[in-house]
Image 1 (cartoon, helix red, strand yellow):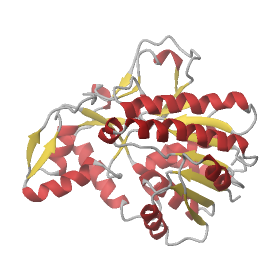
Image 2: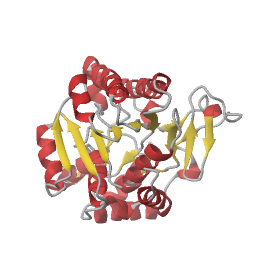
Image 3: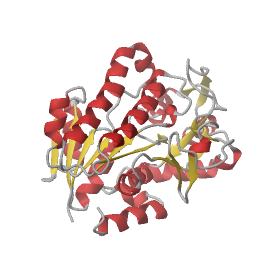
Length: 338
């Protein structure tokens, strides 16, 4: 059965990938974003699909959001200011977009009679935040999940935390590609670690959570991680590394679940389920990118880089997704539960 999905920030890497997949499966997509050139790129990437609606609008305009959501079945709220230095330099705009914009999206969903479920896209930076960006996304998580109190039946509000996506907009790989032409690439700290999420896996995970998570749940994927120095050496082995040092507010290791949050976490096969404020275990542990058990080897990093290069030429991002995530979404899409 075909449905209509609204995606705020729909012209970004994640929004574009989700749109391409949903359109390929016969669904309709309304991409909401303020970047007009982004809409042009999205339309081109989706081959001007008849079921794609590109809606120029800002999440700070609640009336525009409410109008855009009319008749939609599902909402994915991905719009945000994400560039950490820009958020630090323009904190008012970051707070307006990431917090006020999230409030507007939640209120618009609550006022729309057709929205069944709504998912908020968060980040590992929201876990014990050390930057304004992370702090705004933590606020966004709480605001979004709290919306369930105002409408107990529908829509159902859920959230997911997101890791670094190789090759996405703003990825260090694009920066290094340009720098490599001069034989030197800049690395903040070779020992720093970052979680890695294939774009195809991220798409499947978001859609899985959108449809299967219980109201108030925050899903956290079980991700692998890489050392930044290892990624640089594999991506550009012939280049010299210029180490610039950790930037203000930047962490050596990122966390998906902090020690104080772990008491609210429940493990599942491919992810953890966080229910903020509702204890589910004994706690006392954390899930961070510096754990040896999640660190990728050089050969595994090479495999991921190869997979990213292959996926960039594929029209359906789900093709590169892990078997479990792809299977979960395929079964949901084929069932009457959507």
